[in-house]
Length: 385
Image 1: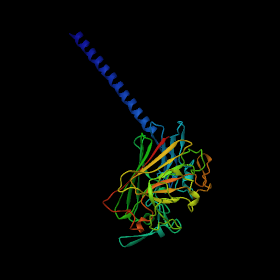
Image 2: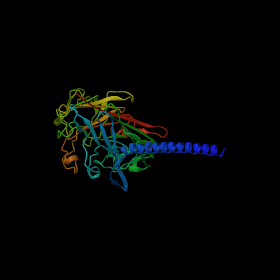
Image 3: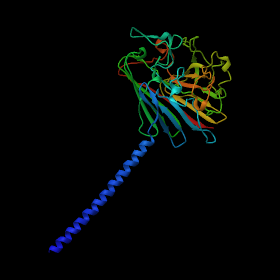
Image 4: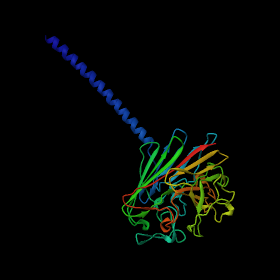
């Protein structure tokens, strides 16, 4: 009997030992799974890029399986790199940029890749009236306000949240009175790289006081991937039959002339340089898109025949600012790989409401009211042909 009890005890001990070993293995497997998960997270970990206003600046990388990579800073929500293949499969960077943070923070940086707000483009005389009150803004451009003022959304560090390889969410609170604008504005911008080689930018904002809002992105494109010093040979199409004509300070007069038969006409693809010399100062104009409502509509295409890279732009906005890099003059420091960005080195396609809309009641309204949500979506799609 005693011997049987001992045998049973031994069997129970052995079973317990086996279960313990099994649990230990499961625990180790769980630990290994956890380590793998951490490794996956670390693959999305941002790269330290410096400091600004005692805040850490990081660079975040988005990618897909088709060979497209986009890099973005939390400083200014700046798109530093868009890497896409040419027709031969060779990857190139199709945006202008710098080698380090000092390039983006240097005096005179012309908004390379940046998020622009609270109001993109110009507001005449740095003033507007709203609900019977006059608001005075920073006069940072020939007596006008440009791109949000002295310290717009392009010069602040945004909160960043990246949960996967494809998407980056940025948020920023613009306080009541910042740069002269009324209301606390909660802004959110989501960058997404899709499997269709698209960079999608989705903007939303809310406010606790009525305020003008016009958010956009100021990336400079050169589809040659650095092989051509200018974009004059790029073919551009703009889905716009009218544009907002401007005065000598680049403020709209209110007139919307037809582009047909003028150097402003890009309704059919033509080289940017074809009529460039006929436009005083170069192209820096808001084109009125052929659309009604706020559906996502094709606004523009651009093509570099040498590389085969083809860009399609769609937006929910009523206008797009086409800028041909007129003020680039080769003096910017720290250009990527030592590049000197000369006049017309890149072009911008900035989705937007019209310039100076707060002072021009005939233009679509840009006033956001409490309880409403500002929405804007723009997509840049890359392919080859």
